[in-house]
Image (cartoon, rainbow, N blue to C red; front, top):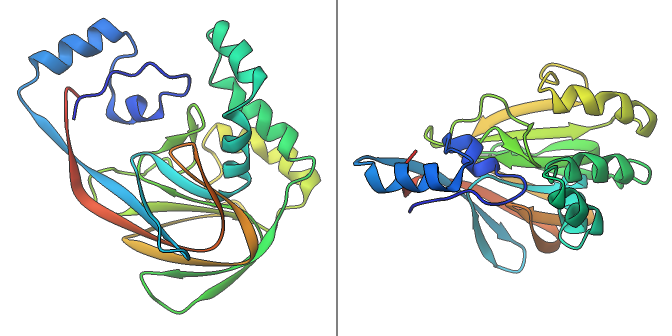
Length: 223
């Protein structure tokens, strides 16, 4: 697989350290003799549908923002200014005004289910960044056979506004309401349906999701 980043977020290119200049990326792709065996994430929902993702898949407010961004006029406007990655941050600020939450049972690697109250989002990260450079899981490694699961929960709406810059700067690890767990697989059971995304694409609303890391499934050239 060869990749030339041309989008507004470019989180896959960022994770693979591919140049943003298309011609430079193409030159590296054509001249490279090595391949990068990259992990893929896989989701399985309650309907039996399976989807793969390269960067991340989340359920909750981050997926709501991705869904809104797909048809956002703000994104079109910022793309024209070369500021498309700001779309996700600005839409997140707007989403925090309503911020739907729910209770969740989460089980890592088929272990004992644990309840998370007032879940804001849970994102399975294959690379460190999503949403145009937001380091949800700063130490995520797309070659370790694991997903870095960023869980955000139990944070009041007013406090979430102040913590958003902390998240954007990647300084959220260890703070109350933030948790990152590395695992090969995990299962989520939600009290009510919430929006799911895979690499920013809308995957419907679900109450049960299984996540699995598929080690070294994609061979990438030019990174």
